[in-house]
Image (tube, rainbow, N blue to C red; front, side, top):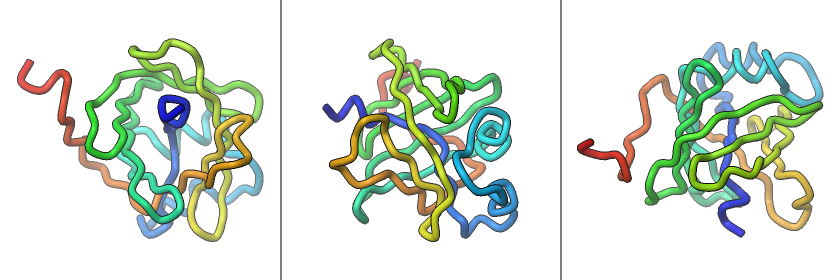
Length: 139
């Protein structure tokens, strides 16, 4: 079940990052080019219900690197599908689709079909790359 919550998802912005709020000026889901403009070149740190959940680095060409907190990094990519952003990771090729929207807490990601769990919220982001624990460390 935890694999289903890989993000990015992808793409939650901490509103404390200066100009980042401007990228979320429109109401409704953040999709396609707006999502790319808001995330590319940044690493986002996600929480769920106030607890650290994971981080995702957004690279050019819709590529991503994701890791649950304290876990190995996984490479993947994202693509738009209607009002959702879908992610596919090397270790789990099935898509994982999310809806992202601006909320007072920051940009909030909700996994398709998961109304029981709290959404993911990025409390901060950084232009620095992720620090990966593995599996490609030292390679």
